[in-house]
Image 1: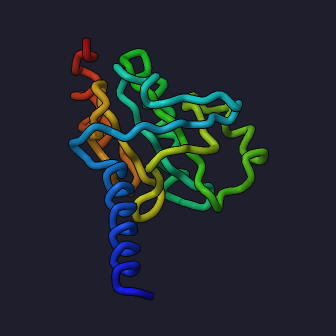
Image 2 (image 1 turned 45 degrees about the vertical axis):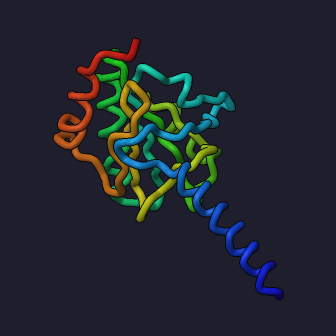
Length: 165
């Protein structure tokens, strides 16, 4: 390969990497948009959720901490949705087929998603949670299960913030 072509190829790859890095969620910055496809086939975007506190939970059926966290998130959502909380449970690859989870999804208050378009996904493992505030700023992004005290410490101050005008 000629040196000029090699340099152009390397610069092109760097540009692609920079563009991808710019869209990755960064705590403290505006959250990149996403599109969720829910179990019922409907779609939800971040733009449609502006003014609400959004929690994206990535989980898997084989994950023991996920199975403990999901009922906690579901109960918490049931209590806090009237205050502007939206929680979405996003099933990751490697879980059992969606059809086998219909009974679980029917019992949950949390909307369940089978797919997400956007730069979100498990970080170092599942569960992984992303929290976006009412203004659309990413406030939390970590792997690890939430306990009730963690949810209260993180979400109550965000739920007490006024929605943007």
